[in-house]
Length: 285
Image (tube, rainbow, N blue to C red; front, side):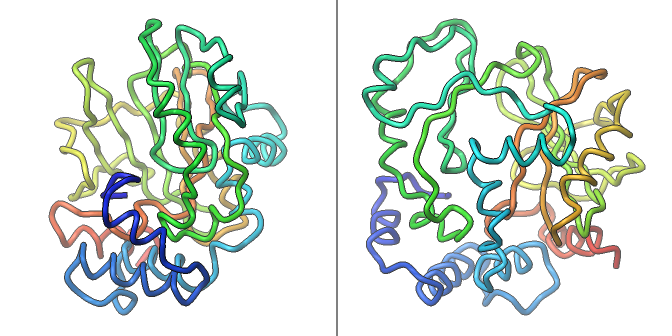
């Protein structure tokens, strides 16, 4: 979301009625505000994500379960036949449980029912427990108007840092009809931020980027990249579009999460033509 949960625009969105009609109206207005045109009529990635949001595809029960960071792990591990989902240290359902939990000095803390609400604790830093507890009050469906988040039980999920936080690359595989078609390689430099490169599965960079500055040079190709492709193919086999987020140390692989509607139909591309190029690359046109 482009606004904070307590922003005026966010409060207005959450105050409006729910249901497919209102969700479609709100998503259309958001699209207009971000892109300056009506949605749905062009062959772009953002148009495709808007169509997913308003025409009922996100109400697929399995998509809804995958949006719950707690429930998703069972599906991921069952489909892969082994425990490759990032392990869970705790699931906290109430403010009292957050207050009484002894958070490890190194851990990832996330809202299990929402996107973009997370904290990394690297060396025992002080935690803003009030902010974390506030996540429990968030109805992310009403805020984002993505039906896959509807009726998820709020929770705070605590996980170990993936590979002990020794991994500085994250790989997000955009898949279409069970085929990984675009690799989003995100490098996390030591001084913070993200540098991004989008590539084909044959590791040829694409001439556009989203949100973050472009990575200079060629992204690191993991030694076990073929195994990552196989995992993404298995997890995406039952869907049209879906994104599979993976971590690797070059030998082992862990699945971070599976994302239904990447960017929420408001992604900005550099250059802007990348929006149409992304969709054409994804569907093989």
